[in-house]
Length: 361
Image 1 (spheres, rainbow, N blue to C red):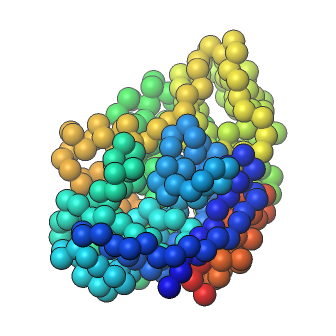
Image 2: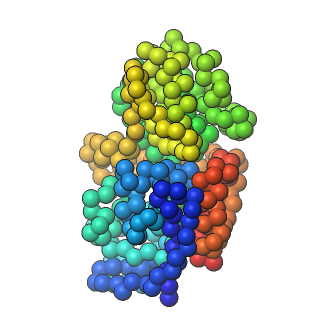
């Protein structure tokens, strides 16, 4: 048996390479899982973009200049030297773009475990936790595609929304969401719109080609294109949450809103190919939002596992609401998956498409 995996060039991640390797010998306590399906979204491009800064290249390390972009998906245990996790167990979590993955389960509980591989110990714990899904109820099993595509992004949306609520929206009376048609943006808008009366207005920014799609979902109080930033109400205290990463968009918001901008934070980079925002002279810094920080704060305040429980409940609700608006596209085989990732990097896949992939043919 061999493992096929898709590697990307770290400095030009539109370039991919399919490599083959022998299955590693399992030591005591390890398992080998066959990766059955995973999602490809703009979130994975963000992982590649911030691979060095946050450490995403370190989860499944390969020799530079190549790297493996992590994905979210399902895998089935096919070999086990861990008594607590038998062959046939189905798991969900952070995976490589590959046919198989070897893990070292520790802290095994009824519903989850942690990968205890030494090289992953310094990395954020939220990415090292795997859910045991064999005993999931039928309604959750029916959402496996959505769980791959939407749950990780909607979990970020949930933590983002909680961060805003936890800080009283930073005094904002309107929240502008850049690249609101991205799945993380959609989730944030949906959650913000459901807050109690007195919530800030939710303004979605998107490209002209995604304008009708975003408006059709009814998840914003108002939807504008990037070219209409100058029409936004600059008199209101404003929080700006950006998924685009576009220097032009960010500087446009900073220049137009000015001193009324109370928060400017970046989450993703759907416009990753453009120049980055430098922020010289900005009255408010544009900071990167690192979800694990707010996650760990709430883990301590709410108790272990409660953030994921609440986020998963909201993700399931939003996934069902979006079912009619999202088309699933399936790709199988290493070469086809590599091409799909390159298309994603080239921004050729519209937000109404969700890709479910498998390197296994």
